[in-house]
Length: 514
Image (cartoon, rainbow, N blue to C red; front, top):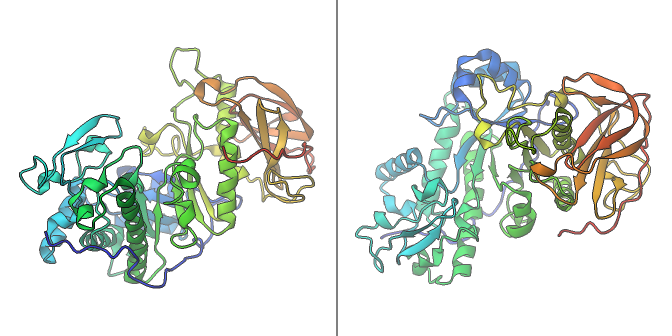
């Protein structure tokens, strides 16, 4: 092999830190977005494309699966409807899918590079745990049973291990990936039409601790004399970050415009917890944007989520841009059809408003918020419309901006516009609230989470004023001064008489990360 390796540090001295995307937004009280993968729907229906552009400020996807590019007709329709809509091209940064492999290998042929330098390769036969928890043995070349170098490619843990993993340590891979990303985000190079950047999915898959790829067994790491698991993984992690930084710099230069490259960390616990060394701890020295695909779902309804919400909000205050997606996981209120775990209509409304209320709790100009009904399988839409799966009507109701309130917030600070503890059941539950000009957003967290516990242990909570609950069709319910909420339920309460300063106890001090 004649692999040319990266030095392990960025090849440019000045990292470009872009400000948050600028431009008007569809709704003045929150920035919106979505995983909008249904290319054919937007291509075949200008009405659907226009609807999407006037509801989502940031659109991820909409690429033709055959070309991996956004059709110019879709781009034009959406830009006509909303000149400020932002597009991010979706590309995996872990799995080398067949179309990507073909593209980059052809690039190697044209540019006199070695194809196998795109991939890591095992030297020894190595057992790998895949995402489905199946353990598969992969052949090694030189010290194992592979008869060719190609047979020893390190797999992606996704897609049942059928496709190879990326090799961010190789400059050949970095150069080829940059060229491919530029091609995929180009709409019309002659007219200077490009998407606004790249959404890098499964960003940490190459260095995932649980699905350990044993990079210390690779030819590439052994060549660098990195023969133990920790040092090999640390090197690959640094190379991932450098490759991302180089990619953003390259795309910005080539397109002569701001280009964002947003890694998808998937989970807030990864960002601020188990993989903080790849994410949150690197913000001051590297990138300043991030995707959290599962901010809220039926899993995250317990008080364990609260410290992560505080960390997310603080990170946005400190200048980090986040794309935050939440989802119901189940397509309807019937999670397990015919079982006792199905939600009532009231619980379904409460759970949907729990998700939206959390978006309002952490709402910040450096955040985009996406709300999907169902799970990842519904990112592409269903039944010929994105309006049922990619949107909640309640988002359209103008609740105004967050307002400063008297009392202590969840950080222990007085007179802020941040979220606060509205009601505290000691170790049983907490209700968090945030006051807006026109509304009070409430979300109730229980001491246990999960779909089966949504609506559990309902209690009446005094509101300290008169409100009307926002209904699922954006009408207002009757005037109320109290509300019943169970675990994993929330409410968007519209001020009935323009009162403010909702009463609430002082925030407890025991909200450290657990």
